[in-house]
Image 1: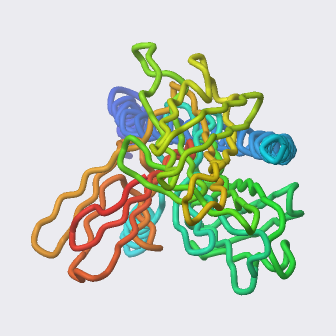
Image 2: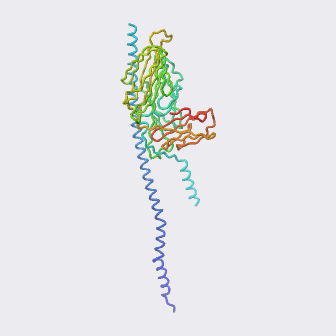
Image 3: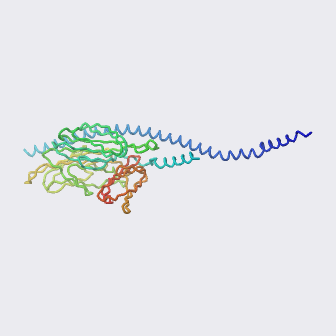
Length: 104
Length: 335
């Protein structure tokens, strides 16, 4: 009758190989390939989040400035317009006075 | 495998068509009080500050004020003097034309200062990490009494204008000196007196058969800043000295002072055969050749047609802009 423990020896050998240095090497290899990819993906994700944050901040700043610039422009026009009318009238008054003086 | 190839092609094409704005670390045109943006008023074209003199009672029929936009965006046109308050959404660099009859009535009666502010939405601006600043410009319609004539104004740079003239000057030169500008006022070879009035300044000068030179500091003082921007009104009153035409002369000088920190854009044109290449500041994000937009400060284009005027405009995200007109492969106008 044949000995049954032969299978056991082969099984031990297989298990030994897998749980020993070869399995470790495969795992290390996989990690070695995956880790730069994982890091690269992580870098890209962080970069995208940061860029989106900067874009959102830029649009917020832009809208704030548009509102300010628009309001300043309206005020500026009102002030300058009334200054212009006042200066033109002053000049006309001066001219009228001069002409009046010349007549006399 | 096929999907990977498609993805790479997509990324490549996306990269090719996507506009990317470039940061401009210099002060914006609006914050520096520098006027930019081109307009045509009653046929007179200019960039930044524009204006024209008309006589009281002149017909407004067919008289237009045109704003030349760049790309897409929003435009606000305001004037407290003549009741203009318009908001326009523009597209594809279209020209916005205002019929002045709508605001002035049948004839021009009163002067009118128009302020414009443009907020451009250049291609893919939503993806830009930098805020896009607007651009301001002004136009003035100077109405003079019907029994007067516009005076001729000559400037140190050789320009001559009739009636209304405008200029943009830096608040102070880097060496602390002011810009040495002189304005010569034509007097029709008469004798008499010149009055100038504006923003608290009153000048009176007698003259005798000669043009009258006014130095910039006589109007603005020596410590002028952007807040001192002003329109100065003047009259040349001729004495009765036997001259045939004794009509008084009128003029107005619009002066816009901008910050010494503002950096004007410059551009270089090089020509090779029938191809022109314009190259501007490295901070330029957008170049318009006529109405076509490019995402670069350097653009090569065909300028074969010698009779055609090519309009080139460049802009940064800070609203700094430059307009160049090219004809016969030479720059004929730049501002």
